[in-house]
Image (cartoon, rainbow, N blue to C red; front, side):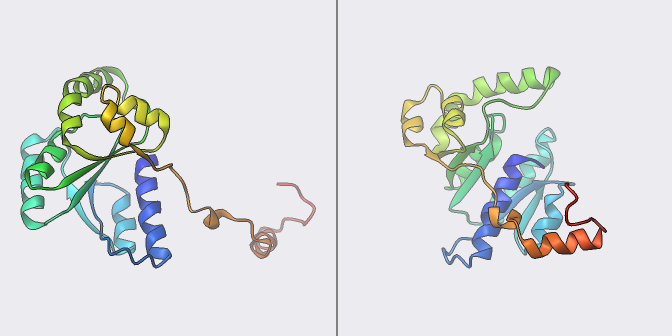
Amino acid sequence: TGGIGSLVMNLVKYGKRTGDEMNLSFDFIVPAGSHYISELNENGFSFHVSPPLYQLPAYYRFLKALFKQNAYDYLWFNNTSKVNLLLPLYAKKHGVKLIAHPHGVDMEEKGIKRVVYKLLDVVNRKKMFSLIDVPFACSEEAANVYYRGNDSLRQRTTIIRNGIAVGDYAYIEEKRQKIRYELSIAENDIL
C-alpha cells in the first residue's frame, strides 16, 4: 500500500474507465496479504500472488512458474531502489523487455534493513542498468537519483508524473447538499 501501488492502479483503472482501446493487458505481481488483491478482483484484473523476496527458494519457484506459464512483452518494474534484481533478471532470461519506473528519491526502510538495502542498491546498480530497456521516472529528481552514473538511461528517461483521477474528487453541489442534509449540518455551518 502506498504511492507506487496507487499510481499503477489509477493508471490502469483510468484506461479501463475511459474505454481506451490500446490493446494492452496487465498482469500484476502482488505480495500475499496485499490490500490490492480485493481491488484487483473487483476490477477484473489478472494477478499473481508472490512470496516475499527474503524467502528466496519460494520466490525463485514463483518466478520460474510465472514466466513458464505466461509470455510477456514487458515487465513494468515500479520501485525506488535496485534491491530486487531477481525479477528483472528472470524476465530478461525469458526475452521480456524491462521498463524501470522509480518513484522516489530515497527508500523508506529504517535501521539495519536500510543499511542492507542501500548496500544492495549500490552493488546491483551496474547490473540493473544493463537490464533496462525503457527508463521511466515519476519526477526529474527520481530520475537523477535512480539513473545516477548512467547518462544514457537518464537522457532517455520519460517522466510519468504521479497523479490521481481528479474527477473523482471534483466539487459537486448536489452531493454537498445531500451530505449536509444527511448529517444535519446547516447550510451556513463552516466545515
